[in-house]
Amino acid sequence: MKEIAEKLKSLRLANWMMLKQLANKAGCIDAYLSQLEKERANLSIMMLKKIASALEEPKFLFFIPGTSWLVEPWQKEGDCDMGSEPTNFLMKKVRQWCREVKNQLSI
Image (cartoon, rainbow, N blue to C red; front, side, top):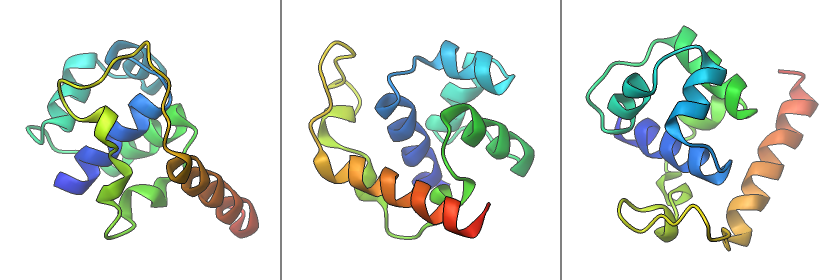
């Protein structure tokens, strides 16, 4: 669950979304997303599908093992400045690769 929580927060911030914005798009409340990011709530497959759709990310991205490096230093708690631009080129490439895989697999 820790890796999924980290990925959720990482992807939300990479998409420049506040909790409330993602909650509105995913059809839940921001407090629930906050609890998910802090590993204090359980995530159902249906809610994962809604969150992934709201983030425009493939669902399988949450389950790729060993990708906790997706949480970038600028996204660590307390360091996030929503006014600054993400600088990690690798993160952008991974997200692009995931979209390409999704398109090839027709997921």
